[in-house]
Structures are given as structure tokens and as C-alpha cells.
Length: 162
Image (cartoon, rainbow, N blue to C red; front, side, top):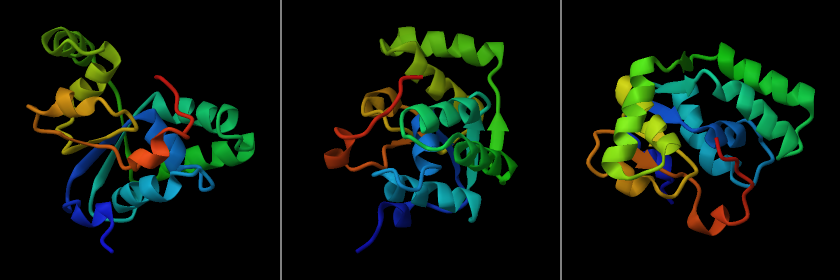
């Protein structure tokens, strides 16, 4: 059986949402296997992982408050990610304004539009998110949307907005 990640090309840049990070850092999470295989090829392989600078902090909160990870374990996992080859990236005022433009143009919420603006600003090839409404948002974009979590698992997951 071929996994989803087998079809991921090499030498690509992947931007994730905060839920992907939190799940990928929680090895007993029900969707860990589906998510981590995508992160693994960015941390140990030829691809580049982009992490928005606020997300490590928020991921630790999600891990401890929503997923029941012990605080020290969550902190260690997040610090390991930050020390990894992942690139921690920030937004500029232009990125934020672009998010509002995208939101108005595509009639989509501004937070999702912010992720797309961030993906555009760093020329991400993939936008990896637990959200299910990015197909339409990304259909005319160069970035490819991917939700690695199978539909049958999505209803039982605890994910966080923002």
C-alpha cells in the first residue's frame, strides 16, 4: 500500500497550521501517523518545513490543554522542533494586509486567508492543515492544499481555532 506522503515530491517547501504541529508532536494522538509522515520528510529529508513563529507556543498550549501531554514533554517536543532544520518564519505588515485582500477577494475568513498569504510570501509548495475548507481557497493558487487526516478520523479529533 502506498502512503499519501509517497506522492509528495522532493525538494518542496511545506507550511503547516498550528494543529498539524501539535498533532505531529504528540506521538499518542490518533492522527499522529498520518501527520508525522509529512513532517518527517521535512525534518529528516529533502523538504523544508516552514513554521509560523507563534505556532510553537500555541502548539505547546494545545498539546497540554487539549491533548493531555505533560508540560515538560510538550515543552521538550516543541523545543526540539525549533532546534530542528525547520524554518521559523514571521509575518510582515504586507503579509497581514495581503490576508485581508485575499479574504475580501475570495470571500473567505481572514485567518485561513492569512495562512495563504504566509504561504505566498514564502513560496510554499504545500499548505498542510487540518481544516477542510482550503480546497476552494487554494484552487487558483500555486500552493497545494493538503489535509493528511483521513475524513473518517476528522470528526473525533480535538483541534483548535487559531
